Length: 106
Ligand code: HEC
Image (cartoon, rainbow, N blue to C red; front, side, top):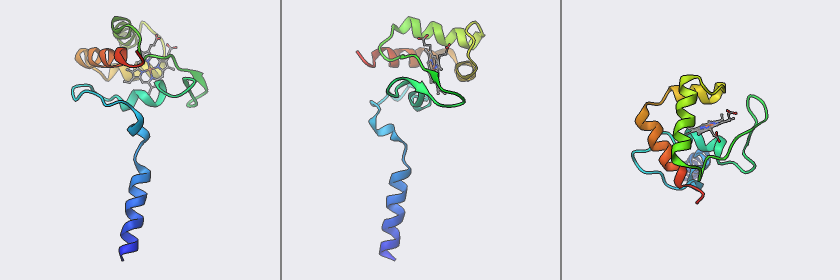
């Protein structure tokens, strides 16, 4: 029985996302892990739904990031993935994310 429990614990640990490598986000910042899978991978490429270049957002100007997210939200920038993500965020969340990523990579 003891061995069985150990196995479960190991499985649970293995199932944890790789988020441990990501710098800690402030408590007010929403959904960082929803971005890092695409934006913080080496080479900045995503493989789904096709292989495409993902821009580096860490360390960019806060205002630039905020404007970009607002543009996706309003449909002024045309990328289905980012539009879907930005539409799910309110202005405060966009600001918080922009501030967080602006500080990354500096
Ligand atoms: C499924 C992959 C994926 C996820 C998840 C994702 N992005 Fe993106 N993001 C992209 C791609 C691809 C682009 C480039 C789109 C284009 O060409 O306009 C992009 C563009 C951006 C840009 C514009 C960058 C620039 O240089 O103009 C910002 C800002 C951004 N994403 C922020 C975020 C934030 C914040 C999140 C999390 C809430 C997020 N993204 C989640 C794939 C993703």
